[in-house]
Amino acid sequence: MTTQTKNRLSPAERDLVLGFNPAPSPRPDRPVHESICRQALRTPDAVALRSGDRVLTYRELLDSAASVAGRLVADGAGPGSIVALCAERGADMVVAVLGILLSGAAYLPVDPKHPVQRVCSMIESAGAVLMLEDGTGAPLPDKHPVRVRPLADRGEPAAAPVDWRRYTAGPEVFDGCGCVIFTSGSTGEPKGVELTHAALANRLASMLADFDVDPDDVLLQKTPYTFDVSIWELLLAFMAGGSLVVAPPDAHRDPEALIELITGHGVTMVHFVPSMLEFFATEPDVGSCSSLRVILSGGEAASPRLLNELAAALPETALYNMYGPAEATIDVTAWPCRRPEPGDRVPIGRPLSNVAAYVVDGEDELVPVGVAGELLLGGACLARGYAGRPDLTAERFVSFRAGDREERVYRTGDLARWSADGHLDYLGRIDTQVKVRGQRVELGEIEVALRSHPAVRTAVVVVRDDRSLVGYVVPAGEFGADGESVLRAHLAERLPDYMVPARLVELAELPTGAHGKLDRAALPEPPRRRR
Image (cartoon, rainbow, N blue to C red):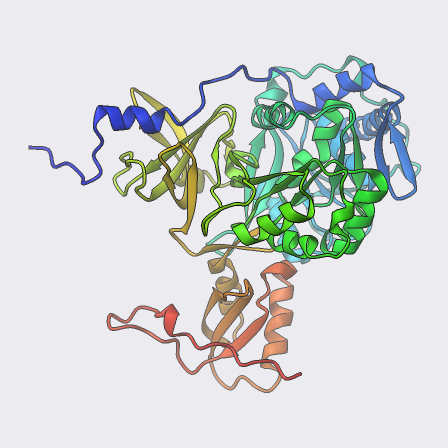
């Protein structure tokens, strides 16, 4: 006799939860950058981009990108290859992204502020053949195999630009990788998510329709381009014939500067992680941002209080709570926030176009409405997998029987549940992954970096209620008065700044429970800093 799980569904219950997913809709048949070329042919003299004092029309933008693409093709880039890009946010960075795409290659964004060791690890695991750089990052080691080229043409022999006016991408481009986004890895190494052109095209086409983006829209590019949200910030306006305003480097952390950009350029659509949205919403002049018709918030759990405050300050602005891991190409669900948003939790909403969501128990059986389980994602949104990591790809991207058919899905590791009206509630993680400043962080990666120092016997990292990272360290011997500063320098060589704990606490031993396992709840509160 077959043993049934307690969550075994009746046929009617199964049909109900499967029916919460949208019916399939037509999928785009060309990559995003080809759609941008077609838009540029329609409106060549319209303003496409503003960055500081620089203003580029669509013709100027595509001419510049085509020149970059020509140099890359002459240097061996093309379909199936990956080109790293290390540059500060600005017009040249945007041009370079389009140039890489026009060459047929995928782009790998690299933060100039990241430690060289991390940059080398990303380039090597992704298999990048070239790197474009603007000189703002630390130089790679002399013997590093990747070929480094200047982002701007500095007197190299002229290369024939790619003809963007007649550009047509073949299937080897559309079905291939368009971007590699690195996220934190629990093994101590970052992992590169390979996003396909097909998935990117589906996501951005859905955004065009869902948010009625048109030539009158002005979008703000402010998210660090190593974060997947930056992809639609960079490209969506160009698909619609609108214009893009590029925030200066580090302006994404300055709410006053963002308000000035929004009001000065009439920005209509913007994205915030909730932690930054809180600073923005409480600025005295936030009400002056009346040009904003859409605010998207995602990357962290949003509170009803925060969204209610923002709705009061900008009553005519539509607010959406978004959810999605990079492995499912930016966002997969959206919730149009109510005014006011009731309850103590903001839903993550309903699946977007050509996205399938399933909530399952520990035996991968669908669970009923109201029951918590792991969220699996399928459909046109899925990434190809992890660059150079077939083992991890096979572990996270699996086959799943949904109803009467098998499909490929991504195991998110997120807990969720369906509501009776078909929206999803996010309930947290089933592992130790967290979000810090909107960036996904595996605590295990930080712990591995701490333990790699010879003065550390063991270490554990947690997130406190104020969203700050705290590292607890058991030294291997005498730690010394400058132990914390030494460890900070050690971490800074290996991790981006948002992954370096705000506090490092020395302990004689890590607390354990009755079975000898780490008792995270027993970790002491870090001592207050002296003022």
